[in-house]
Length: 92
Figure (tube, rainbow, N blue to C red):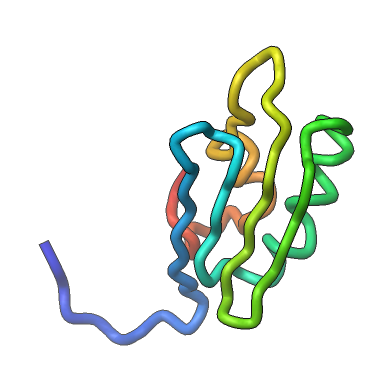
C-alpha cells in the first residue's frame, strides 16, 4: 500500500548486498555517517576481517572481508548501530 504524503527530508534510501561467497559487501548510495563509521567499527570488533574498503565517486561503498571461522560477518545485526533510531532509515 502506498500513501501520498509529503517527502520526508530526513529519509535516505540505499541498498546493501552480499556476493555469493559472503565476503564482499556493497552499499549503493549509503548515508555519509555509515561510510564514516562502519569500517572503523568492524575493524575494532573483528580486527582481521576487513581486507579492503573502497568508496567510489558514483556512490558505491564496498567492504571486502576475509572469511572467518564464524562464516559471513552479519552486517544486518551491526548496521542498526550506525543508523539513527528515529526510523528514518527503516526499522531494523
